[in-house]
Image (cartoon, rainbow, N blue to C red; front, side, top):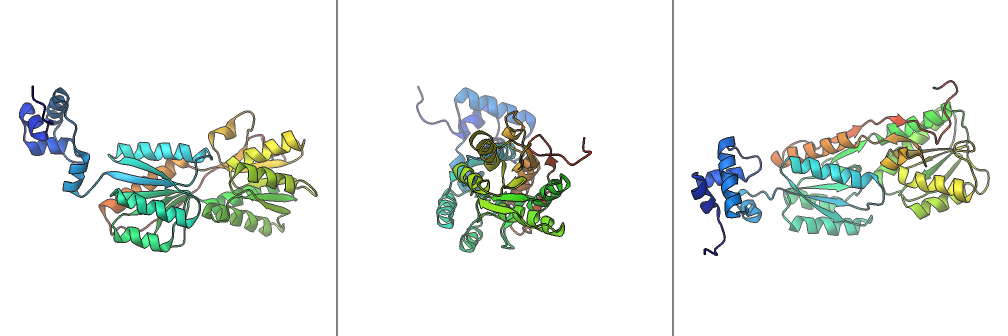
Length: 338
């Protein structure tokens, strides 16, 4: 019995095609007729042939691998986004490597350096930012990067986000129109562009209406920090309404208000979040929140990255996608609203 490893030449001989035809069939994006593809794949199955992705990458100069780096997965928004990013990239013929990083710049830079060692074709950084030095390192290596749900001022860095400033503004207008005047804010991690922009849009619209922020605490996008922020905010002179910088924290805020402090939502206080993760529609929360248009964000992220892979001279993009305010039962509605 023949024990040597099956090669593409063996598949070509059995299928009655050239070796280059076999290569085209197993190369994403390459052209091969439907008839040829069927013959080659049937031969490959009969012989137990598996294409060598590493060897193919050495020949083509492309690994067809994308590195995705994310800081944390506790927030429901990110597992959902990662699933959709992975599916979208796989539909385009790419494989996904997922790496975890801490929030601090040193940790993120170390992970990106590790990703570069895998000879990836591109990088998507979800929920993290990176140093200008490492951005230059990626450019020098010819590896494009796109930020997902984060942005930074560097002009050569592509970034895809929801319109966080507009989202914060929508929430402020809603709470004002609902008759609230003592309005609080529980911030996320202050190193995040999403936190900065949501608060900026929120505060600006309050100020335009002649209001100032009644109270502010920091939850850092962390459940326990959010609970403590709630205790402090409602210990004296509590607000009538509170905007929480994301849904993940808003759930902790609502649980603390209702089950620890005995404060009724929305009868005693209105609570609004940001993201519209699946749990926001659960009957236990029914959270009013701004929806991040994750499908649109994912598609734009993948399109932007692949464009840069195929055309390194493509202009970097800063894309902000508007999302709707989804009204549920955690906040009072404006008078006359149905």
